[in-house]
Amino acid sequence: MTALVVDDNMVNRTIHHQLLDNLGIENVAVGNGKEAVDIHCSGKAFDLILMDMDMPIMNGIEATRKLREMGIRSMIAGVSTRSMEQEIREFIEAGLDDYQEKPLTVSKLISIIRKIN
Amino acid sequence: MNQMAIAALKNQYKSFVQSMFDEGVLDNQFSQLQDLQDSSNPNFVDEVITLFCNDAERIITEMNRYLNYQNVDFSKLDSHVHQLKGSSSSIGAHRLKLACVNLRQASYERNKEECVEAFNSIRHEYCLLRSKFQFLMQIERRIVALENNQQ
Image 1 (cartoon, rainbow over the protein chains, first blue to last red):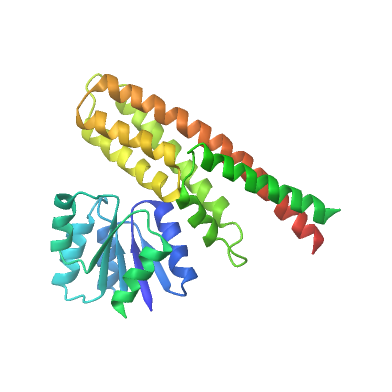
Image 2 (cartoon, chains in turn red, cyan; image 1 turned 45 degrees about the horizontal axis):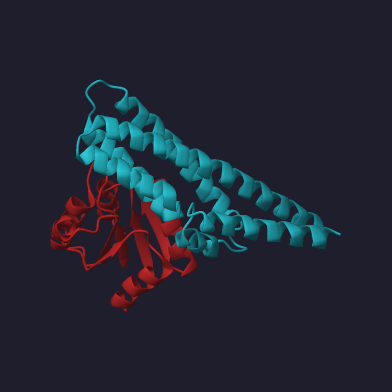
């Protein structure tokens, strides 16, 4: 299984990368939605995308929408500090398969991965 | 002798972390971070703490700059607080996270005076956290140095 971490915060990228590593999931981390789209345009594919919501250049909502328009069928899990329904509704409607509130933990990540399997 | 010194340092490390939990400085998310450290990544906690502190200081400097303007750009201020709240939450910095929540609220209300007060609280909580982290990492490095000497 492979994963893409999309988060503009380096602390979060480091933690999410290690969480995935410890579960034996090969992963790559990028810093915003545009880089997530670009890496897919370069031909790479991932089983799982952990997508932050608030990012500069291209946020998680735009990136998710764009990836779905490109025909990307990977599991996209939104991971954000937002908790209000109206805040995350647009994110979900952009094409998420799952949403988890940060901080991301091992148990939250396992519940995301179970949905892929 | 080394074994005893290592055991004593490990106890000191454990007690100090517990005191940080008891004071509410850290929450369970820090334990999650510690659980991610293993023999293949023995410096993980140190690495994340360093990243966090560098990032937090950059953000706090920026927030201070915005608050010193006569007309505060609350939107930009909020964007920075959101960042700091996010990384505080991820590392388990509980009191710092709560201080960020207060500044977000003051920023949302566009109340400059309350923003300044909340910002001062953030600065205080960060300085406290940083000094405790520095002490913790000193103990950890001594443990690693002693364990490496043994091998």
